[in-house]
Image (cartoon, rainbow, N blue to C red; front, top):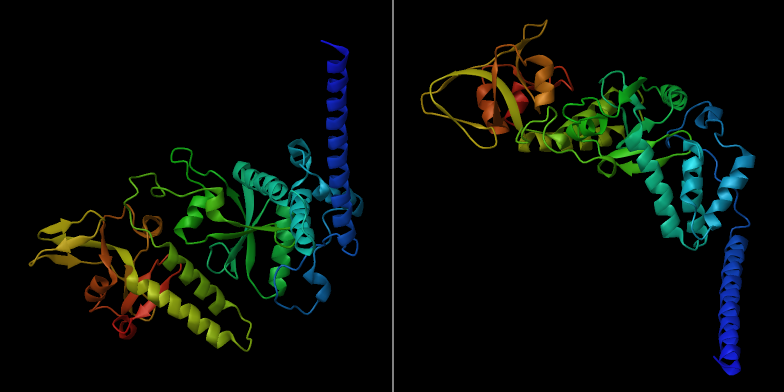
Length: 379
C-alpha cells in the first residue's frame, strides 16, 4: 500500500468522523429546539378521578406520588433518543406512569423525536407489569358486587393504598365502593384469571391507578379470553354486551345523585340494555318430557309434544319469576348441581315459557334485572 493510499484512507476516515459530528450536532440542536418549545410547560400533576364535582375541592386531588426531584430526573428521559430498557424497569409503577403521562403531554405540545419508539417501550412495560402482577386491587360497587364502572371504565390498581384513597374520593361522590384484591391467575387448571372474568361481564376499558398518575388500556391488550370460564370447549353461551349494559344501567340507577341530564342518560342506558336482551340467548333451567333436539350452539329445539317444567323465584309479595342466565358463570351461582338441567333459548322462546309467571329475572344472584310480564312482550 502506497503513501497516497494511506493518505486517502485517513482522509475518508476524517470525513466520516466529521459527518458523524455534524449529525450529532444536528440532533443536539433539534433536542434543544424541542426543549425550548416546552420551556413554558410544567411537569404533570395528579389529576382528578373524574369530572364529577364534589363539595370539598381539596379532595378532588390525591397528594402527588412522585417527588419534584424525581420528576426532574425521570421527566428528562422523554428527550432520550432511545430510552434504556434497564432504566425503565428500575422505575416504580407511579414513576413509570408519570413518564408515560409526560411523554404524551409534551409530545402533544411539540413533537418529541423518537416519540413512537419510546412511548411503546414505556407503554409495554406497564402492560407487562399488569400481566405479571400476582395480585391487583380493583374498585367494586358494593351494591352490585361487580367491578365499579365509571364512564365505561373499571379502576385497577397496583397498590392497595392508592385504591383505598381513590375509593374514599368516590364515596364523597356518594358511590358505594369497596376495594377487592384479585388474583391475576385465579385457576391454575384452566389458566383463567381476573381479566378473563372481565370479558364475561363485557368490560373492555380499564384505567390503571386512577386518582394518581394513570393510564388507559383495553382489556384485550392484557389478555385475550378464549373458551369458557371453566376451560371447556368454548361453545358455551356468553353475553358480554348484555352483562355490561345491565351493570351500567344499575350503577346509574342506584347512584343517589340527581343532575339535569340524568333522566335522559338513564333512558339511553336502559334502551341499550333492552336491545341486548332482545338479541340475547339465555341459559334456562328446566326439566322436560318428550324428545328435544340439541343444536350445535347449545340451544334446544323442542318437539311437537315436548313438555317443560321450570323453576320459579318467589318474592315476599307472592310474585313468581322465571330465572334465566346470561352464561355458565351466572348459572353456577344459583342452580348448578341443584338437579335442574339447563338449555339455551332465544328471548322469544323465553317469553313463551314465562307466560304463566309474573315475569323473568336475569341473573338472580348477579345483576338481578326483573322484567315484569307486561313488559316482556313489549320488549
